[in-house]
Each structure stands twice: as C-alpha cells, then as structure tokens.
Length: 239
Image (tube, rainbow, N blue to C red; front, side, top):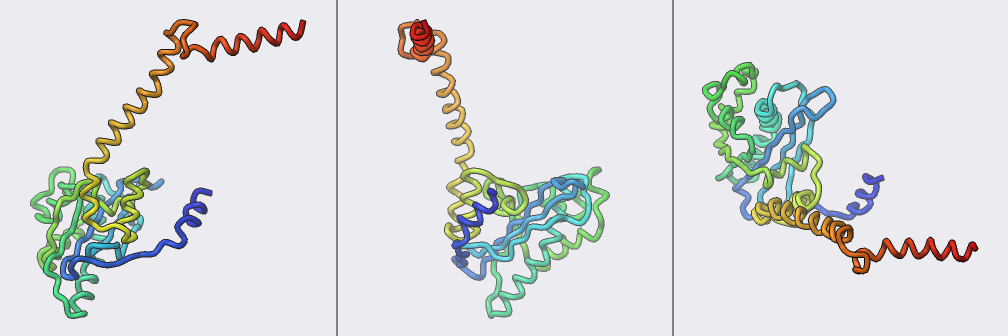
C-alpha cells in the first residue's frame, strides 16, 4: 500500500540533469554489509556533474564478504566499469575529464584501493586478487579517492532504507531539484534533530508528571474529577 501511494504521489516527477562543468565528474559508491537473507552485501553507486544523478546502480553483490571494508572494495569493483564508460563517453563528445573524483565513507577501503596489498592487514589478506585491479585503474584513469561524510553519501539512497529529512534531501538531489552543493547545508542537521527530538520528548512527559503531583483543585488534575462526576451522575439517575 505504501509503495502504491509513493508511486501515485511521484508519478509526475521529472529528472533534471545539469552541472557546473562537464569536465568535472563526481562518483559516489557505497555498500551495505550483509543486509540480505543469505548475508550478501548490497552495492549502490551514482555519477553526477553537479545537478541530478545519472547511471545510478543498486545491485546485490554476487559473493559473501567478511567485513564492511571488503564489501566496500567489492562495491567499487562492481561500479568501476560505469565510471570508465562515462569518462570514455564524455571524451568521445570532445570533452576531456579534468577532475574525476570517487567519494567513499570507509577509510580502510580507500587505503586498500589506493595502496593494494600494502594496506592489507590480518582481516583483509584473504581478499581476492582480482579486486586489486582497482589500484591500477585508479592510477591509469586518474581517479582521486576522497573521503565523504556519511550524511553526504548519495549512494546510501541505493543501499539502505532512509527516513525523514535525509531521504527527502537525497531524493531532491538525485532528481535534480537541488544541487550537489545543497548537501553541505545538511551536515549539522542530524545533531539538531536529535536535540529537538529529545526536547520534544521531555515536553511530552512533563504534563503527565505535573498532573500526578498537583493538587485535586488544580487544572492539570481536572480530567480525574470529571470522570468521577460522570459516574456519580449515572448513579443518581439510576436511583
């Protein structure tokens, strides 16, 4: 029912694509670790030039991973082909990519992708060698790997269920109603939302505590005598 309501409410939405510069390509790749019933992870990725998202991907990984770091490496391996194809397509149109950035929120995965086996520890030595072609491709394709805060990770939209303001903001950014730059204004909002929610919860609890501790003649305790009066009236009428 909720899915049908969402489709009905967004059936007229349009995808707006644009950008500040066609020579600056930005990519977001993320992975949700072991979220499926068979404990396989999920890969999400997206490419943007400033407004709207193209070549988005949301796909279940084909193998089981032993850590979130390994899942992130596998996710980049799954989406790296899309990045290479997008770069080749733009260059075939006569434009040369000057800035090619890959955003990730897992620093351990970033080190493995950049340094290969040199950054592998005891928990990552088992990673298949075929995933280390990422290191060679990152250097040959001149791709910069930059850390992205979780609240700015657009690929989260394709890997896990989101709620509230973050879901609406990422949806607007993906559809092109807002730009990528608008994500910077959202960084401090989660902390504010937690403070506001805690304040609202205390405000809800205060009337209950005052009504119990107040005197019988106070306005806060008025609902209790009203119920008693109703019972007494019924008894008088019954007699």
